[in-house]
Amino acid sequence: MINKIPQFVFVVCVFLSTPYFLHAENNPPEIQEVTLELRTLSVSMAQKNLIQFLEKSDGYFVYQNPRSVAGYVPLNVSLETIFAAAAKEGYVRSRNVTNQNPTERINDLTLQLKAKEKQLSDVNKVLADSNLEETLEVEQELNNIRENIDALRGELQFLRERASLKKIIFYFESTGSAPQPRDYESFSWLDKMNIPSLIERFQ
Image 1 (cartoon, rainbow, N blue to C red):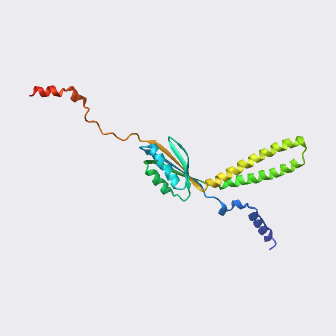
Image 2: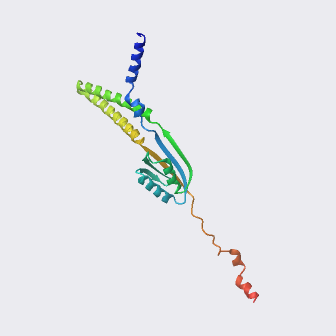
Image 3: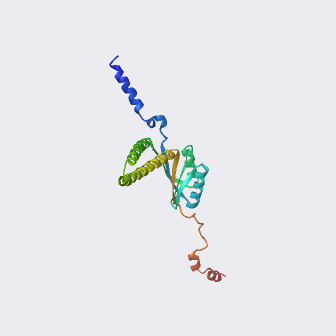
């Protein structure tokens, strides 16, 4: 019984020392990105319709150029709905779905942020006891730390918000103009035969 107590205490200590943000129930959903390539008769019309699709799905588009449109939709918009919207605008040549779990990156950023915040607190204490010459150096260090903290917080916020949305990128290729009806009136060989002259010869 005496030999088992240290083992039990060790297990409990390991569990309690695990950061709360590593627990599975707090892990964010995977980041999903959907890429589709379309061939369409009118790229401009297809882009307009798919931007409307993004907005009607409670999403938004982030950029548009002559060859592509990218945007975001909520996670509850199914892949089937996205594929169907693309298929209405032309022939879908390819589609690709990738998933990325941001948990490891979020945990890493969180640890970095805590370390920087502690460093900021330590440098503030040094600042209180420094002379004028040292103060300038310490304030520069404080500014650097604050910038690092802002950057870490910004990336954390981006990852958490990004995990609540699907990213969609549509690529477009024009199929060209619609087939034109053949002009059967322009037969050059008939012009060479001089039809009026032939008619006169047989009258």
